[in-house]
Image (cartoon, rainbow, N blue to C red):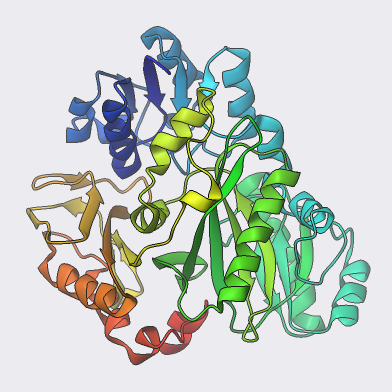
Amino acid sequence: MYNRILIANRGEIALRIIRACRELGIETVAVFSEGDRGSAYLDLADESYCVGNARSSESYLRIDQIISAAEVSGADAIHPGYGFLAENAKFNEVCRDCEIDFIGPSPEAMQMLGDKNEARTLANQAGVPVVPGSEGLIENEKEAVAVAEQIGYPVLIKATAGGGGKGMRVATDLASLKTGLEQAANEAQAAFGNAGVYIEKFVEHPRHVEVQVVADKQGNVVHLWERDCSTQRRHQKLIEESPAHSLPTEIRNEICSAAVRMIEHANYYNAGTVEFIVDQQHNFYFIEVNARIQVEHPVSEMVTGIDLIQQQIRIASGESLSFTQQDIHCRGSAIECRINAEDPAHNFRPCPGRINQIYVPGGFGVRFDSHVYAGYTVPPYYDSMIGKLIVHQPTREQAIDCMIGALSELRIDGIQTTVPFHIRVLQSSDFREGKVDTGWVARTL
């Protein structure tokens, strides 16, 4: 087991990792930008180092600064959290070259799965269903037209690199295909430095279902059941729950087994998420693998009782999984709401600023993962998420009612947040009845 871990991240996930390390008896090293100087969670780490100016490109994305902090502090390993360098294969390789363990998959697996086109090919080889589409990257407009005509409109143009909805366009006809190709490629080049795109059949009104997987270096792979992440806005997840509502048991078992096959075929270890879309007839298709821990990991922790961050650390240090698939049971229902510093009444406009007062809800089955406090100033430089409210109850109906109560108790004064939006969603009959797909928020709210 490690003696000291450096956390190459900030905010809520950094605090989450610090807590997991303390429970394992591991010392922690935090890094921070000038924009996060003075944040309270830094005091919980054994050491902390400034790695640059407020902007991410000058701090949290500076591989040289992160590695320097690890070497100066004597860290055995680096946990990247999510975002920033978490899926950066180059950073992973640099860690290996510097003889510092990267708490995540190998750089080879990360690079292979980080390319969505390569991941599609791997899924085909593993017998995992993929959405009909181009066999490789689209080389020119003529090829795109031929593929679209073969699989039929509407089609989805997708960047092979990156994520978060960038480099994606829906084309419903020839004209929108031509403009969408250029727009998607330009956006992908600007965001990821890779203009490569491919084409898939656009599945209308799908659900977004993903499977949490953990795998050790000895080849043992298990899943922690599925999460439904269909409540989205502009491809950004807002509410996640486990298990997925109204998913037939047979399909649930098949989708979880497919995720395990995918991870086994990729020679992947550590935590990862295999993402699928599910159509109205419960046909499921592979989308991508997120080679890291995800924001919504707590809902899987709540229904299984397994601490995923601690598992990541144990696996990276060489330990075998201490449980088998038969030991993992999905108990009850868990829901997570991402609390963002945004104003839902004004098109989710970011609302950085000072939090004057905060009251955190409690009670049976209520968990609030956050680094903010009264007097904290939400900086304008990073993602707007300031916390995650999670509830766990015996049934989905009880979990929804518990979440509404917890959201009503949560008070964050001084800035606008997405709390009113979440209450509105949870009170809707569509959500209660499980009639939410990835386009529901845009159509309905």
